[in-house]
Image 1 (cartoon, rainbow, N blue to C red):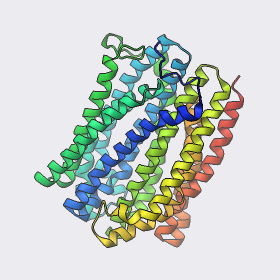
Image 2 (cartoon, rainbow, N blue to C red; image 1 turned 30 degrees about the vertical axis):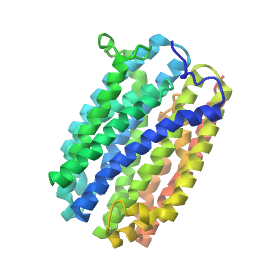
Image 3 (cartoon, rainbow, N blue to C red; image 1 turned 45 degrees about the horizontal axis):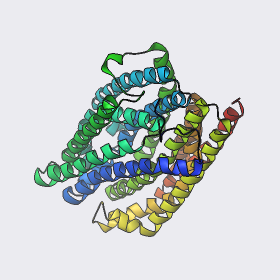
Image 4 (cartoon, helix red, strand yellow; image 1 turned 90 degrees about the horizontal axis):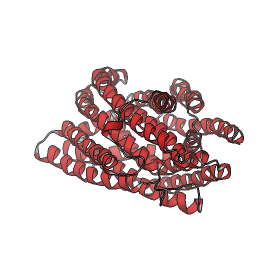
Length: 444
């Protein structure tokens, strides 16, 4: 097995985790920026109505993509464990079985998403003037679910073996294509929300083709081979036991956010548009912090597989420190330069002012989400996903729904709605940390 520049079980963890995370961070930032181009192009060239329509779909898109990301987290954890243990046979079975599972899940999500798009938007009480555009965007966007599933699969495999550069290169190519297609379809063809959706789908298939193609071309033990593509029963069971709870965790978390989106939709169109513009900061900051969570799961997975207990805890602590610091710095930057950030998505002052209401509160809160998300990633690296899912559902998802129907229902202000984020993060993080320490103490 070729472990050059890939073995995460020896060396300085501080520098290794940072160097491992930087390409992931760049990849995540590029992905967010390219996705932001959808909002920016449609907001600037198709008006606030189109901006609100696309923005109204954010939570639903996150619901489906979050499930795929959670599934890929299971792939990452299991592949990292076998790679760290130098178990080539099990690694091959895992990679080939995971490819087929992820493809099947992507196809199912595409069919399901297209079928329920209208109903979900109505359930969210999407504004009448926005719902037609939002439905059109969603139906097209969901066609890209199989591609997203395969890209996340490939990204998980490469990250598990310590290679975070290839996904960055492929995403860069796909992202540039997305931006160019956005401008072409919206400005030249006048397709507004449909144009940005088509551009997204085409770029998603490009990134998937490049990533999966690289796995077929490489000669390493984790390479894909057509002849080896079959479902291994034991690997399928393990992947589903890891991936489905992680996927449901992300999906249910997004489902709870549907109640938040429905509450946002109770305000006027200007507030909805401002929230949509400001919510782009969530994706930017969370995805930068996610680079450290991926590093945490990969390092813990390999070191757990290699039986190096001390490096498991150190990997968690260093990843947590990096992610908290990143969230704090970026949050402060948004507070100071929030208006300039929002100007990327709209030229309407009223929308910018509405967006600042969210940015100020969230800018002070982002860093604290690291205690929850990094600990969940650490537990996933140990192969634990069911209990973290239950904790997230109880401590964050259920809590958020209760908050909407109690605190927000009482005050009825947008501020009282946004404050639920930090409170839910703190409560969930406390329980996740207790669980992770318990699992760590059981390692022999």
